[in-house]
Length: 342
Image 1 (cartoon, rainbow, N blue to C red):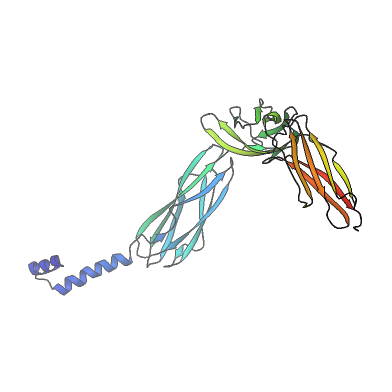
Image 2: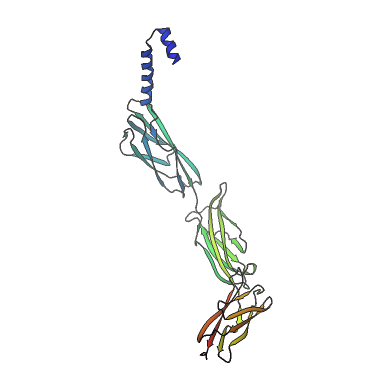
């Protein structure tokens, strides 16, 4: 403002005239500035397989006060194409959709292609807006199964092996290879590739694992020379490590009457392969009490006491012999029959 006063004084020009001229210039440039097209600065089309075409789209908007005309669309690479949907003339506040597709070829890499939109407004100001199209070509590793299930395996058994196949679909390159992260309890061997697939042998050693549900994840990496890891696949593995437990007797019949109102018995539990040192016994029945009276590594004795249920009828019950934190469970059936009360 001081500058306007000084200029008016020196050149003897009307202060009102200078002020109006200045505001006129500002108004002109504010309403005719060329940067009136709004759109994203980048769009990521994600991963694509080799030679796969990926479609994409984005919205542009005229945020200026003048009509904008789209004059040209271009990209920095012939692998990417864009086009305008709708009229090239865009009124203030209106939008248009840009659609396109990209095919980054068979070279495993990350890509950035710049797409440019050239335009001008109604008074001839020209400008250009750019957006980066981002993507990555990956080479998927394909397995012939989604999961490996060994099922039930006795802890005393030898190792069990399951074979699966890994490939890159219909593509074969001699420099490809597979690496694997080893998992405790499993032995994973990748054989030499035959034609376009790799035989993978997965072995489990139950003797090194506790009796329980076994779950693990095998992570396989596809490696290319000069590129490192180009794909990673997780393969779930599960097994049920079990063991043979024998109870003698496994079914107990008890007859109670007025003359015989209680019963004491012993069940012998043994296993050729399982350590029974931490087994427990329980019963949900109020008139049956059970406890372990003798315990060793491979055999236990379970004593149970049955008292008068004080009502007539047949009472099927059971004792549960189990190991905390394990899947070991043995059910002994007990049928209590009470003769009619006096």
